Every structure is written in C-alpha cells, then in structure tokens.
Image (cartoon, rainbow, N blue to C red; front, side, top):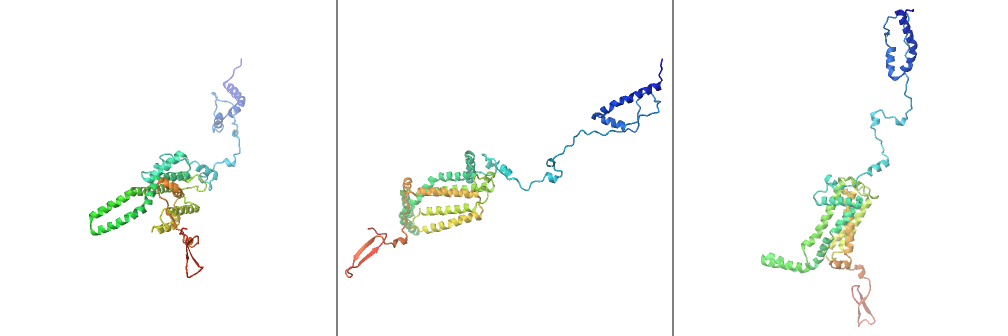
Length: 394
C-alpha cells in the first residue's frame, strides 16, 4: 500500500500544472484574455494557488510578456482623401468659383408666384403697384422671360388706351374750326367784362357753349385721352423702375442674350436706339399740327431737343435696363399706332379729319413748270413775257 504525504501530493499537483500550461498561450492570445495575462505577468507578488504549503524549493518563473499582436493591417491612405487638420484649411473658400457651378446656381432661381411682389413690399394699392401686380400675373400665366414680359405688358396697356387716344385726337382736330367761330365771341366777352355787363357775359358764354356742342367738343373727352396716356406711361415707368431698384431677383435673368440683367444700366446702343425712337415719335406727332399754327415752331424745337434730353436722362439718372426696355416698348407701340391712324382711309373710318396740307418748299417755287400768263406788248414787237409759278393752274 502506497501512502502519499501532503508534500508529495502538492509536488505532484504542481508538476502536473506546468505541462498543462502549454495549452494557455493560444487562449491568452485572444483579445479577451490579454489584459488578464498582462496583469498576471507584471504583478509584483507571485501568488500560489495551492491550498497546501509548498515544500519545493523551485518557484515558478514568470515568462516574459509576449508582444501584442496587431490585427490592424497597415493600409496607405491616399493624400487626396486626407482631411485638413487646421481650421483655416477647413473653412477656406476657393478664390475662383467654377463657371459650371455658377450657371447651375443662377439657373435655380424660381419664377415669381402670385403674392411674391407683395411680400417684397411691392404691388401696393397705387397705379404703379397695380402695374407691378399686372406684370407678375402676366409672367406667371404665360411663362415668358422677363424681357418679353415687360414688352408684352407695355403693348397691352398701350393698346388698352387706344379708344381714349382716338377720342382725344378727334377733339384736338376739331379745335381749329371751333376756334374760328369762338374768336369773335371771345372778343365780345372781354368788352362785356370791361363794361361790367354780367348779363351780356352770360349770353356770350352760352353762345360759346352752343358752338362747342355743335362741333361735338367736350373738355372731358379732350383730357381723357391725355390723362389715360400719362397715367399708363407714368405707372409703367415707376412700377418697372421700382422692381429693378429693389431688385427683384428674377429680373437679373432677362431671358435674352443682348441684355442679360435688367437691374443694371443698359448698353449704350439701347440708349441711342431709344433716343432715335423719341425723335421719330415727335416728328410723327408734328404732322397732326397745322403748319400755320404759331405752336408749330415750338414743336419743331421740341422734336430736335427730345432725343438729346432722353439720352441725357438715361445716363444722368442711371436708369436700369428694364426701365429703358419698358419706355422703348411704349414708344414703339405708340409709333405704330400713329402711323396706322395717319392713313387716310383709317382716319375716315374712325372719324378723324384729314391731315393738314403742307406748304411746298420755297426751292420748288422757283422751278419753272407751267406758264401762267402770256402778254404781248405793242411797243415790243415779237417779244413775249412769260411768268412762271408752280402754284398756278393751267
């Protein structure tokens, strides 16, 4: 029978644990046991896990720590993908913006919706605000670019006042005939006023009113055409100019290539074209006036000065391109209406009198055309005196 002492059992158990320690390294290499192994390896005091005191002189030597295995594979990161480290690099902006990015950004401006101008402080309850609301509705319903929206708005409003314009022209054309009949009555009115005869003044006033009624003259019809034209023109000028000065973002994209931005000053060619348009407009308006009228000279001076004043006003007050486009459209439509209304059949159709006849130039009066009179003088045999005059009839 073999008996084992406590020391022999302890040595046997301790010696059996060492060979089994060969199984520990694979387990220790697992990430969950690294910290536990390091704590056991670098512990300053070795601990005996045996319940019995050891009688062996050999103490277990701690194995040196194994280097930690790195599971992360070193991969090279491209330099272009490295994020900036300093705040100045993070928040730095490029000096130049690519053109394609600018085109993409400018192309996303949404069109105006009903009520957008009111939210900007425009389209108020004024004539200019009403015209702004009209342009907003026209642009929203038709989808036209803003350049053609302004042109279409001017054409529509100018066409709207045609009946008032024709009525005013009819009244103005009848004024010379009325003035001839009223001139004697006006002289009598002055004499009656000087003598203090109130009853005679009333009779002359009633006679003058009867003459005006006979020819169909009405001060309301006369001033209605002038007032309507001025109201529409001034409202369009103030309305478009206010939209360009704000400015409305949509007006920076006109939709045409020759005037890309309607909120800046127009090119010189557009200003010169508008001045030329004003010259043509004043020349056509002078044809409606009798050349014998004392005001004819004033109209000629105005026709000469109007283009210069128009160009000076655009450059001096720095009007926007949208405002000049609106004025140009109004003048162009007015010229077309004037040319149409100066055609004799159309004038007769709308009840306008014929245009006043123009006197022949003096240079034509000196050209011999037809002999006026042939006189033979008895004292001059064989001589003939011929007098030439272009105004004479055969």
